[in-house]
Length: 87
Image (cartoon, rainbow, N blue to C red; front, top):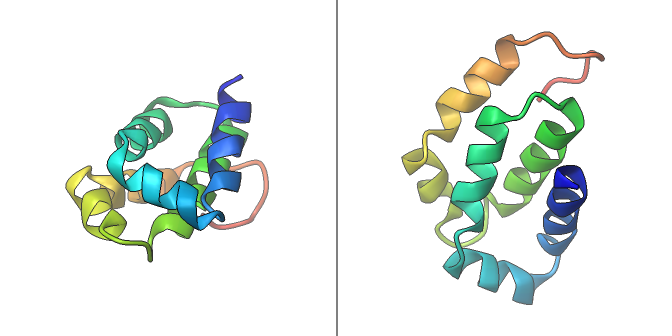
């Protein structure tokens, strides 16, 4: 269920009116919280793809830094993944 919810947000990150809503909602802190605590690789991957889409939109970049996302990504890079695709 978590994966499907994150996948839906990823799909919405391609739709500009939805991105405008994501700016005003608590979606970004929730996504960062999930990526910090999730042990499921597919959940982490879809959230990272979502954050990558949002990186260039509005104030998302600054908010990601405020939420500590760079440190989270560094720790994710140090983990063993089932394939060799980098995050």
